[in-house]
Image (cartoon, rainbow, N blue to C red; front, side, top):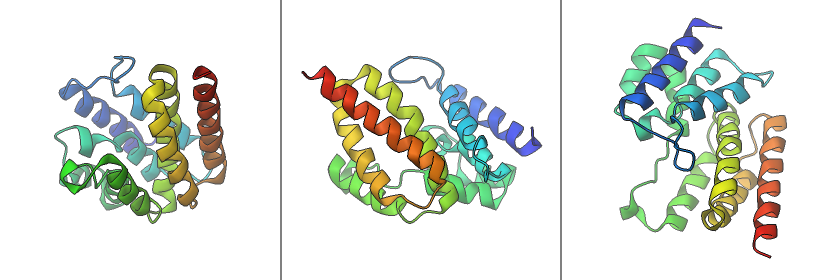
Length: 180
C-alpha cells in the first residue's frame, strides 16, 4: 500500500475516533465507512493514490476538528482539493430547507472533478444500503435526492456510476415492496 494511502487511513480513523463518531443505524465505529468507500475507489482501474487518500478523508472536514490546512500539510494540495470538492457546502439550515440545500449541493457536485465524482459514487453506494435496510421513511427522501444527484453527476468512473444506479434502483424497489 502506498504510504500516502496508509497515512490517510490512519489519519481518518484517528480523526473520527477522536470525536467518538458512530454510524447512525448500526452504531459501528464511523471510521469503517471511509474504509469501505476507499476500498471501492481503489478497485477502480483509474484510481490514483490521491483519490484513495481523499476517499479515506472525505468526511473529516464535516465531522471532525480537522481543517483543510491540516489535510494540505499532511497530504498535499491535490488530496485537499478533492476532499473540499466532497465536503458539503450547503449544510447550514439558514440557507433554506433540506430540499433547497440539497438542490444547491446537487448543482455543485455536478461540476466537481471526475475524480471527486467517482469517490462520491462510492460514498452513495455505501450509505444507501445502510439507510434502505434501517430507515424506510428517510430512505424515500434520500433515494429521491440521490436519483437527482446521479442524473447530473456524470463525469466519474462509469462502472462505479452504474453500480451506484443499481444500488439506488434496488433500494427503491425494496422501499416500494415494503410499503405494500
